[in-house]
Length: 284
Image 1 (cartoon, rainbow, N blue to C red):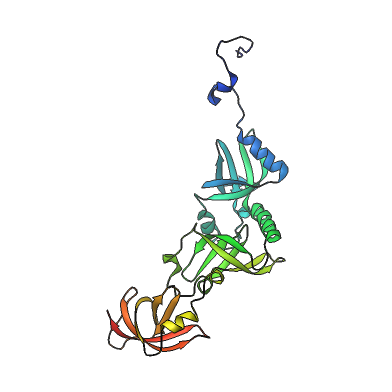
Image 2: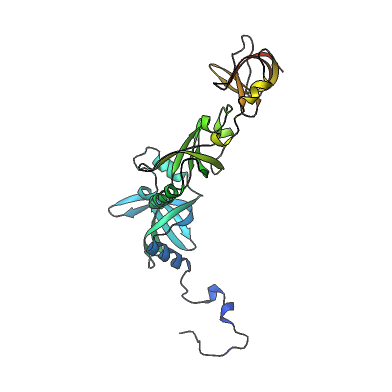
């Protein structure tokens, strides 16, 4: 039985029809998917899960994206993660619940399915980034991984490795206590290798260097209160102010731990090396 359309209804406005009342209505997201496929544009969506899906002769681990009721799949080899990496699957899974960029490779309305590539999207994003940045530029960086001594961030399709000494002038014992995945920091572009799509950035380059001004505050044989910011085999770091950490030898008869308040005596201030050597004379 077909719908009756050629009647007049008082108060009827087609714009007021609820979507669920329109029969066989095509999901509007299909237009977005088709347009992205035809124009090679980038879409974004949340990676909601993983399934082993048969592609060709074998099953592949695929990430799942939902566009309303339309299912999108991203095979591991199109994830932008090296499939030969021993941690590839874990790295792929770490993207779950996050919004990712992708390009549509193919689609089937009959199956209500499309195949996508995060790898190709990131390559396109990287090309755009490299065209628009230069050494000295300031850019935002989204943190993707946080490790004890370094972070890995994304500056627009390009992964950047930032060691702790390019994040601060002071001592940070464990970056995982300061940063988390998803944080956004501002960095300065230090080097660009366009051929290999590699960029070196630094957050420290945008910070005010506490040296040599702090050398006027901390004089030789002066005694100052600080807080233990790290304990290493070769010594104890004591934070005196933001970005200024001195290095003191271990105590002979007493142990200190991170967070302890101590009184230190300045042994030497080396402005050129940006180092302050101290000795802990009292645990407060």
